[in-house]
Length: 518
Ligand code: HXC
Image (cartoon, rainbow, N blue to C red; front, top):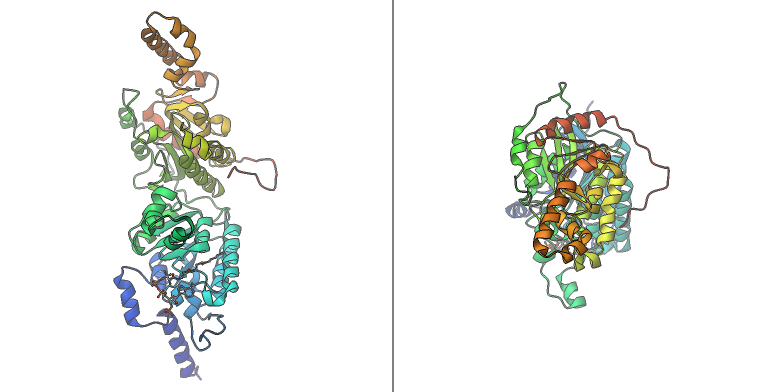
């Protein structure tokens, strides 16, 4: 007694057909020649070996007419299922461009929606690889409805499980909104683009001549629009980024991030941090150097590194504890908070808070960015997002004020009054309503105007103001900060603070949901 051979042969044949996307070796070779992986290669490269469980390999299309009655679209153009990355389960979706351009039909959409639903039930991150010509034209409104189901599931999953999108081919029109609804977006530098309306439509409607390079590529999105968090050289690089990103994230909102706490406390000072601080107050301190000394070696993944460079965000570990870092970068626009920097930091903080990731803030900020474009562009509304994001946090908030901390921007950067649990300041910190020069001109205007030597008087009063306010002690005296620390003590003090805050519980008044400024 044994199963009939022809039944096994049929299964084997169907599997082979699906695994090769129903296409020829030549077409697969042509795709590889462009430096692109196939949909299944992407999944297999992402996952631990032999851990992929496919759901819906034999699903077919639902196209009526157009000569499709006898045509098969293997897996309906999308490979979905479950697997493991570094031993932890993930849900995966990989659109197959070799099957009708990866176009999204109703069953294709149903597979995507079911994968997301399963991810929420099991509590696994969702990795969605986008490589598609968009709504399947032959299925008409059914494919548009499919997108609706995909978007709805993106939203239902938001804040429940981490969602990571890879743009690995075309991603046009409404299709771009699924990645936009996810938490992180990675795009390939070559062979991919993402846009709502293409060059022809733009030309027809506005008369502007615009090339895809200007607005649809990974570099355009990573540096100008901010839609993309990471630009990748190729599929393999993009997958490495996804794996590294996952190494910092919990699988869902009910879990802690993968902290790797050492059993022993390491109380070691770092004299190199003292040496970093320039003697001259006007020389900017490169915040990357501070981040490097604070974090464990090799444990840093910067997010949106080419967008709004005046603020640096990313994931790292301090003595094994996962943190989201938010740091002003005085080397760029003096570290001021403008519209893009506020948006960038606010959405990162919301993500960290949703997924229980403590936030380490490094403050060196002269203020919100002045300017007509900023005021007209809505810096009030955008800056308010940053205030909202910090104030809504229930995760541990540890802040270190390195140097400048002026006005509303000081308050916005994880200050104690906004919810900061532990706020340290270096002796170089200047915590004040504004810088000495501006303040002196306002409060001593009359005195300076009446002086015989205006310049000398102004300088004298600036010095006087500096002496009084350009330090952390007034803030320390009022209890606005926790302590003044030597730069060399920063790493172990931050580590101790984080360790003791891991049990933090915070409650907010119950409500349907808050209304973050948009
Ligand atoms: C059905 C599609 C398709 C689509 C591509 N194909 N896009 N089939 N619906 N939307 C098929 C092609 O017919 C072809 O099938 C195969 O995929 C490969 O396409 P090619 O054109 O040969 O490939 P290439 O030259 O690389 O060009 C890729 C492309 C182009 C740039 C994506 O195909 C294209 O412009 N497609 C249409 C894009 C589009 O406008 N989509 C609708 C967007 S609006 P065969 O059988 O020959 O292999 C949208 C609305 C979403 O998506 C709304 C959400 C609410």
